[in-house]
Image 1 (cartoon, rainbow over the protein chains, first blue to last red):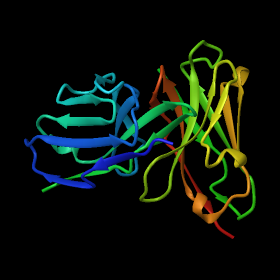
Image 2: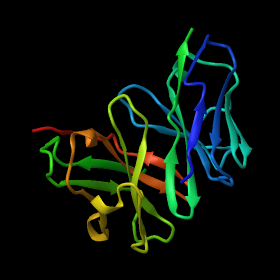
Image 3: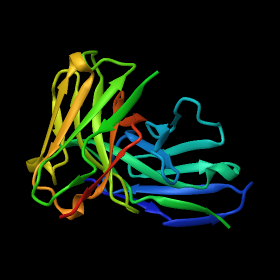
Image 4: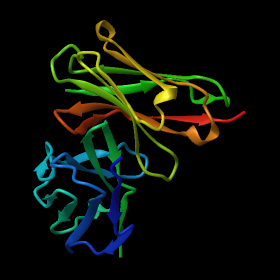
Length: 109
Length: 119
């Protein structure tokens, strides 16, 4: 079973700053890597799929990169509404299953 | 416009079986490539994938919970049902129904339903 490890657990930044969130897989996940944003009391929202593709209506300040075992979510200039918890998620083929990282909390400094 | 909504009990007793229904609109589970999944989140904790059913009735389960889970679909009613047996307090969580985007991610989510396991 593939394990996803996100770092840091908490990231404290100010609006306007650049945020870099990491997701590392215990083995290669090909390109089936997604990122989600979750705000308190809300369902997660898909931000990035297939490692680097922005989902519908996601602002251009969100970008994803990486392949194999190391992936990054970058928020180029933080807006007040970006402070939330972010999860990475992968799909593996054998066995076919989906796993999530433990999350990174992005908080206002 | 795709929407999903979960329904079911908010409180179950230990050892009981949980049955959750996902009612969706905006897509058909008879269309090639479509999948509907269940994901849960204990209070204050991370997301955990539980199960997925495809348009062709292929079913996939989390290996750690496979013995307790059953997922079925009723295409005519636009519903997916998840049952989980032998509920335990550690199963207390918000349960989400999701639409699987092609390949490996979930692009639409229900609002979630909080299920508490307690005697």
